[in-house]
Length: 104
Image (cartoon, rainbow, N blue to C red):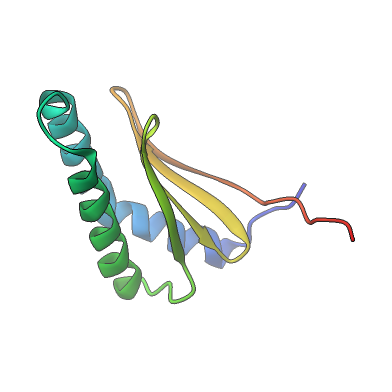
């Protein structure tokens, strides 16, 4: 099992500090409007916020992967880690896994 280095963890925490409140807003709005709005609008908003805040942190080699409704949030790759930032009715959090290397 790999351990994330402190610099990587610090940058992800900083990104979460910058984007967490906006994710909560988008989650709450989605809960109210999911019967009427297209989720593509939320994907666009998350991508834009991610790009903007990655420039602020800076996290130049972070790559947006996808957004989802369950868990509500988005996934990105950074420094060899698959990171998921998500929101639900009780928490705002991030978690990371290190993809297994393929054997040749």
